[in-house]
Length: 234
Image (tube, rainbow, N blue to C red):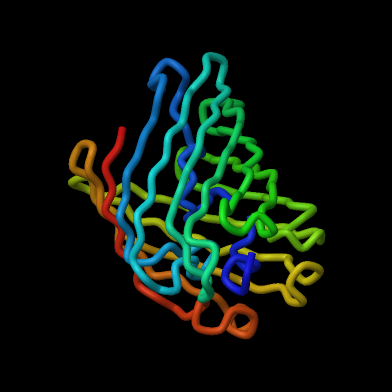
């Protein structure tokens, strides 16, 4: 989108971080009709880049699960790219989740990133995520209009999440942003962190950042940073 969203242009694993609540769904019989979440985060970081000018913001998501593995929903967050607009982001998504085997899950979705007060930044992204043994994941995403630039961009991410005693978990991942056509440069992002759950309430503490090319593209928005997130949901 703008410096911050051009880099952030495009998401969902998920965004590992996006914050988009559609990936890694449980088996159909264990999935509720509706998933919801509310969160407060110290910084909305997307693919290593701050979308909230390194400031705290609120987020909310709602997903409707349809029998057969299909789902649709919306996710919203406050944003600040360092200018007057936009002030918030609303993403709409539809997808399909299926178990290929006991150890392989596949998720594909189309995510539409929208900025109601800066529509020129809107764009869509196709995102796939393959999870192995409920631990390791590979995400591949593509947009033909990354950040509203009318240019192609790809995103590749390899990550994992490991359960620890007492409802703690550790996660780590590294991503490659092939954004040279859209932004003039490719860059690498990474993340690692711990999380803890108490029923419907959870907390996560992560450390995220980019390589030097990310710093060149986004300046302070790509600085290495600690991110604390508190959330509630089902």
